[in-house]
Amino acid sequence: MATLDETRPGAAPWLLSAPALALFGVLLAVPLLLTLVLSFHVFSDVAGVQPAYTLANYVEVVTDPYYGAIFLRTAVLAFAVTLLCVLLGVPETIVLARMKRPWQSLCLLVVLGPLLISVVVRTLGWQILLGNNGVLNTALQALHITSEPVRLVFTMTGMVIALTHVLVPFMVMSVWATLQKLDPQVEWAGLSLGGSPFRVFRRVVLPQIMPGVLSGSIIVFALSASAFATPALIGGRRLKVVATAAYDEFLGTLNWPLGASIAVLLLIANVAIVMGCSKLAERRFKHIFE
Image 1 (cartoon, rainbow, N blue to C red):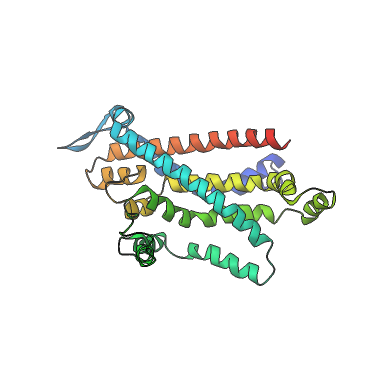
Image 2 (image 1 turned 135 degrees about the vertical axis):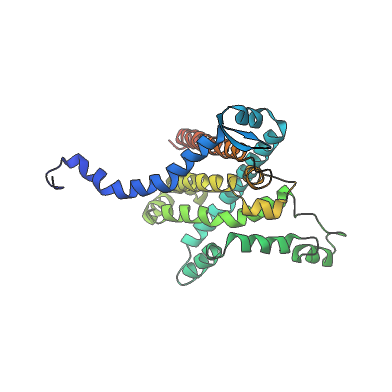
């Protein structure tokens, strides 16, 4: 049996990564493949999932305006959450990076601390805060800003607020990792050469942190587009997104092939939008900052 030293040098990385690749294939690729196969099965209200195959499930999802509205709602939700996470997370991370110890560590712990709490618990907390008799509406009415409760639960606004709170830490972590590689002397050099703080930020700092912003945006968009717990608790049964629609097909109507086709289309749309936006953003910012 050939040893690792006797094999070609190019084979060493593959041999070393083989266990991880095998685990990845078993835990991710196999379930996705089974879901894809299930999505082509025929479903009968009487006999359930049939061994025959059809494209009717995909045709129904693509042509039915009901599912079209759900996919559109999910896309709007994901883009809105991603935009808010960029607007809130990037300045927040820059401020944190310029803090002195121990305040920097303390504030970073406060920002990332919610990740230690279950997303269901955090969403239930937002449900209490945003409810008609919640803390927010009680405060607004006590300050005579509104005369009646503002409806935020079971609305798109409530889902955007809750999901932004859930996903902002991922944006902060992505930008934080990029800022740690940024040499402060480069920024100081720009200021010493007469550049204004805004111009130095736009021409020096921002281009260098853009990889972190783009990677954070991709993570936030993917997680918000496929989120289930927060939209289910805040959005309710009437304001469905794709994840909750697939859940209802699996456990409500027991139409597993239709639910699988919804899940597959969500994956395809998610990957296509993320890759397209990533390429577009890279070209756009390359054109501006070169």
